[in-house]
Structure formats: C-alpha cells, structure tokens
Image (cartoon, rainbow, N blue to C red; front, side, top):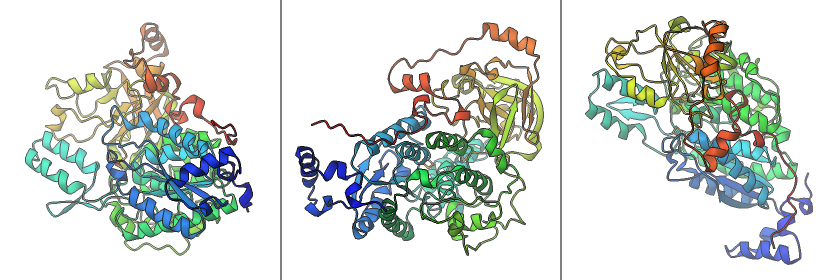
Length: 571
Ligand code: FES
C-alpha cells in the first residue's frame, strides 16, 4: 500500500512552501476545497474527446462517470485533454500522429502531479497512442474505451462502418448501386456516438485491451450509448483509486503473457492488422521483447467472432452475444496466466462467461473459419516481414503466383488504376510503393487499393495486392501489408518492376520476388528514394526517426521508459 504522504502528487500539493502554495492556489480557482490536497490520490483523466474525432464524442460524458466514483472512493479527479486523432478526418493519415499523441500523453502525465491515470480513448490510434505514452511513465493506469456505435441501418438491413463503405463504393463503380443510394446510406451508417461498429481497429484495440487485462471486463463491446458503459466508467473510477493505493503500476500488469493473450484474442475476434504495429510499439515502450515472430502463435487460432469485416454481424450483436469474456472463455486452455488491472489473473475476466448467440460468437468446435490468425510472411521481398489477414482474404488467392503491376506511389495509383487500357487480369498482383512509415509519411491505410475498373466490370472483386502501407481494420481482401523494409528505406519493394513474378504463400509464410539476386543488385545501383515534400516540423522529425513496421513504427528515441520523478520547479 502507498503511504498517502509518499504519493507522487504530494511533491506538487503537499509542500508548505512557495511552490506548494502556487500549485494549490491556482487549482483552487476552480473551486476545489482544501481537503482535495490532503494526500488523497489525484487521478488524471486523460481525455481524447474532440469534435474532430467523432468516434470519441461520448468521452466527455464518460469522464463525468469516472469522476463521480473517484470522488466517492476518496480520490481527486482531474481531467486533462491531449491531442485527439480523428481517423476519418485527418490528413495525410492519423497514424502519422500516433507517436505525437503518445508524446503528448507521456509528457502530460509526467509533468503534472497525478498518482494514477484513466485513459479515455476509442478511435483507432487514440488507444495505442495513449497506452504507449502511459507505459513510458509507468503510473497505475486503466482504460475506458468509447465503445462502438449502434449498428448501422439502411433499407431495413444492418450496415457496418468501413466495411460496407468499401463494398458500396465498388458497387457504384460496377454500376450495381446508384449514387443516390450511396449518398443516402451515409446517414444511416453512423447513428450514435461511438467508434466503428465493425471489428475495425478501434474495436480490435478495445478487445485486446480487455484481453490484456488493462480495462475492466466487458469494456470492449458495450455500445457507446449503453447505460452500462457509463456504469463501467463509474466502476473504473473506483478501481483506479484502489490501484494507486496498491501501487499497481502498468509495469506490474504488463508482461509478455499479456501480449501473447492479445495475439490469441486478435485471431479469434478477426481483429485488425493494425494491432500488429500497435502491440509492437507498446511492447517497445514497456521494454518487453515482442517480435513479429511472436504473432505466429495466433496462426492456428480459429475465427470465433462472426463480425465484419471477417464475418457478417456487428459489434452491437457481439456485445449481446457475450462480448470478449465469452471469446476468452472459448480460448481458456490457450490463454497464458497474466496479471490484470483488477489485481487478479485474466481468468477472472471470463469465469462463467457464456455465449448467448452461437452464430455471432461461435464455440471453438464450430468456428467461422479454421486457422484464421494473421500470417507473418518473409522472403526476399520482405526480409523484415510482412503480414496478411487470411480471415479477410479470398481463400483461393492465399496461395498465388502472379505478374506484378507496379504503382510507384499513391498518386500514380490514383491516376492510373481505372485506366481502360491497364494491362491487368485477375491473376495480376498489384504492387504499391511509397506507403511505408517514412515514405508517405505515416504508413497510411491504402494497402487495400481498389480493384481496377477494367476488372470490376468483369466481376472481379478481389486480387492479391502488396504494399508497405497498412489497411483499415474494417477493410477486406487478399492484401499483403507492412512490407519491411519499406520501399523508401531501401527495401526490395522499391526494386520491383511491372512484369516481375511474385509468389505468395500464406500457408508457408512466403512472399518472394522471383527475380535473381544479380538482377536486383543491378537495379539497386540506380535506385533512389522518393524525395519527401516534408522538410520541417513534426513530419520531418517523424521521417528522420521513425522505426520500420517490425518495430511498431515508433520513433527511435521514444522506445523504453523514464520513470524518474521530475523535481525541478519553474517558480
Ligand atoms: Fe474512428 Fe473507425 S474511424 S473508430
């Protein structure tokens, strides 16, 4: 137990000198009484609410829920804003700013006199960015997620954010949906506060946070507007005060086993490929030895959650079917013993959990798909690795050899993908360069490039695509992502030419460019990276310091932690 006189916050508010006066007095202008500074745990509520991050629009309300219970439990809650990352609103890509959010979170937590922190996030990059920053300071930390939107509705059917947008867009291009219907569907898609209601990156990360024991049980799937989410926020406020008393820091919860459980859960829920870069980056902050190879343990795990984009239901259905606890219960003999923010083993998160709809959450002996976890690919085209999500791919393309058609960058792809004379067929492998962490910059979600118009018209809906970029967690297709090293960092991807043969074997984990080493050496002699248009500011810092995807695309100087107390004052 932490002695109240030894709390971190007492270095700000417990001093009977000029500095203590200044710290307390200015806080009192908000009406806080003397006893708020009597040594009770001060709980930071780190909020990514923003009107420009619509997925996090419910977080102000949830912050009030947390605060209520923090006061009730004898703590003192203080809410503070950090940078918010609105996935659908930011250019060039929210991922460029994940590390900036992590820096903001880290330095805010370190600089202020708080003893524990509640992370309020939801939209894709907000959860990993907050956790990365918090891990580098290492206070008692717990997550409350936004929760998913209610199911989308259009013409009497459920529609899912992201997944159905890609489908509708292809249908319009194929002449199978009118533009009027397309425009009408957008209002029915997003009907309430909350994150994408498919198993996109946001719900994936919330599910993994729960499987890692970093939130209370049921945090991932409760709809954003379900009153039980407010109750969960309330209970989280109680728990963070206890965690401060128990000195239950993030480093006492997080171990390799938590990451392994996240990898297993990610396979079972059909989670986003983005989880790979986020887990690798978080492990780097927490100083846990996690590599791409560790993701292979998910390879044989069956797909149990029948949610878009890998299945047909949505997060609201997933919640009512039992949510993450029901999935973990199915995986019970595969999960590793692991600590949680509750101070108990992860098994306490799924004790007695049941499935209430066995088409939405399948029992392990009747999965949606066998061996559905992400596959790690290697070969001369990706010496540092690449990944593919079989559950979102076409089975017949997972073992494929074809001729490459190369787009040198995103502008080349956009300008030419729908050319009527594009020399491609359904066996062509589309290759896109310049979309890695340094190249774009920020590793955007463009790896699932559209099917060329000439093939759409022939009814082709999927083909093998290879890039150093990422893919939205809501997207689908036979898409090879995160090719490492990226083209702009001198990777083999940069040397691929239209007409080269490429071999993909998801089963054997192979991604090979069938070109001789001697020929590649020749090409290397004349290869030059694309010149970046970013010569200043954060983007320049990012390009100069970002690590490759196999290290989570964190900035090299942010890996690890610094848990020292800052003692210098400005006054
Ligand atoms: Fe924010 Fe999907 S865009 S969660």
